[in-house]
Length: 158
Image (cartoon, rainbow, N blue to C red; front, side, top):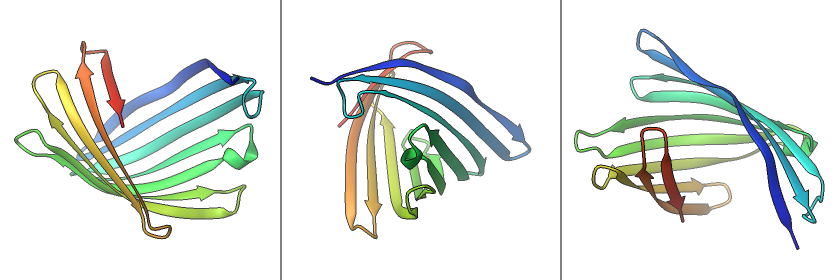
């Protein structure tokens, strides 16, 4: 029987700053995971963070993760373009390149398209598509989000 229990997730920083038309976002997270009777049956810990620059809808960023398991160390470089139409349709077209420095280096890349649309005042629907041209592998996800309050949102993806 596998029982997994997250001991804690701590958001260290999350925020943005703007200088003229350029916006800089950044954040970090520290996560501890305890897996009783699981694959490793031990404790895993991760430190991940990101920095992103955006200007006029165009963005580029760096996401990284350092783990107590050396093979889980990862660096992602990404760029793209995102906007929203007057009718509320949001779209995001991007590309991400994945690197695993302790497990062979450069891995692969993914082209992504994300669409979102409000369905009423508190409900929104999403469609996320991803394609890895090297592996010829694609993924599709549909989702919905319900805004409960200004601070709480419930969402599900399939």
